[in-house]
Length: 122
Image 1 (cartoon, rainbow, N blue to C red):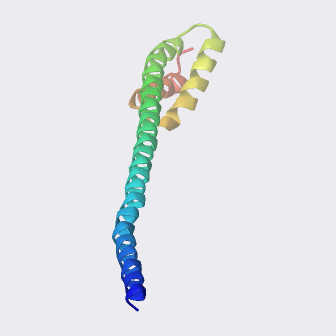
Image 2 (cartoon, rainbow, N blue to C red; image 1 turned 180 degrees about the horizontal axis):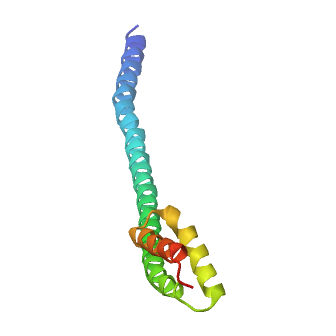
């Protein structure tokens, strides 16, 4: 019986040691979970950064477009006074196409165009 109780006590000690080691083992996967969570956060940040860069590129392109239209409207408006009929017609088509964008410069040019169209001068 003494031998059996020694074996039982040894088994209990082994079980206690295993139980003590298990929390340590459970912390390691938790560390991996933290690492994977950190990687997911970095990936999420990268995606958000890429989305923001995409928006910046879009807005830069929009500003370039508006600037180009502003310069073009000034030139097109001068074509309204051209003696060539095709120049005047193309200028009118351009201003009609730009008018829906509600740019102030285009609206002013359309008003001037309407004055020319409604005038009685040849």
